Image (cartoon, rainbow, N blue to C red; front, side):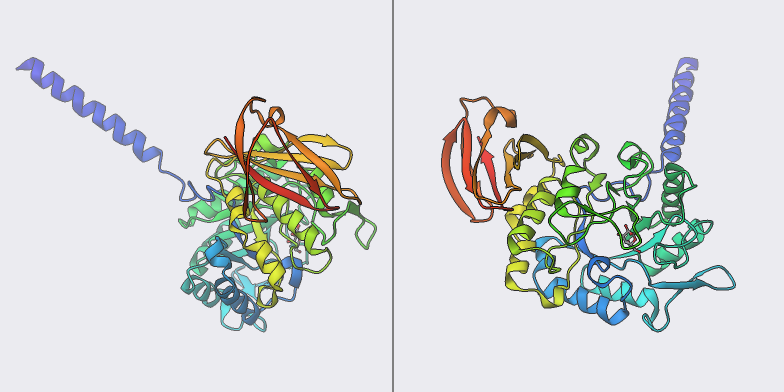
Length: 402
Ligand code: GLA
């Protein structure tokens, strides 16, 4: 009898310990966000401060009508300049001219289309466009964002250079989580404090690895005020080398938003830009006017075979596996054991580029099926290597499946 009572008491004690531990480990509402790289649209690259309720709603309509939603694009994100001041309670004030019905109305509209809603703020006292930032108001703003139905916050780094980056982003993540709403956190710190080293630990879902992208093919370019630098596609690409091990489901390197369709590059270059972002498992955040897209631009942004490389559930970021001057091979391991491959010609004349199996981690003797993701064509089985002629500034993008 006595023994039974002891056993019962012991069992009760153990179940008490287990339930206490479970209660303490209340999961963050943001766990399991962005298990594949986020896809959507953002206002900055095309519209800068020229944002408004009508434009954003029109863009959300266009995400659906253009087939972008079907291709996987879900976030509609308003970047800088929606905010004008703080009121007597220090609540953030939305520009009443540009957003006459307020942010909740915009969020409700976006949600009614089955899409998700993103906004932008800054870890410092002001945003990059000089609007009020989040410093000192993190918890108050997070409650406000949650009430508007915000699903995604891009948090910039202007007017913040004396702050500790890791602590600042940990603070906004804690504030977002305290709101109770799952919100993707996009760390926009430009790579200065190497956010790939701490971004995941502080609950960031993606972090910019570089300064701003520019709608150009080439290298770095100084800003109009002489400070350094905005980056063409190749300059951004080169800054991703070596960062691949930091990315994975829920936490991604972000080489900045897409410029596809904004007019500064050729269609071939835009195809290359999109292909490279996909092999990098980069967030695919379109930055063009989706209401007026040429068919060529539409076909780039909605190429489902290329998007599937970006969104592969294994979550590996691709890497440069071979380089010979202007000729490069990039490869990404996929969940089914296949590899996505890009043959990239950075140069000015057509060249033959070869991907050797050994550079992909495959034995030389392996026979594999090759499929061209832009031509949508099976190219048959090959052994040891795959070679193709590649036009200047172009890619050949294939999957190699054993
Ligand atoms: C910074 C960011 C950009 C954009 C602007 C807005 O430059 O890196 O992506 O958000 O601020 O002012």
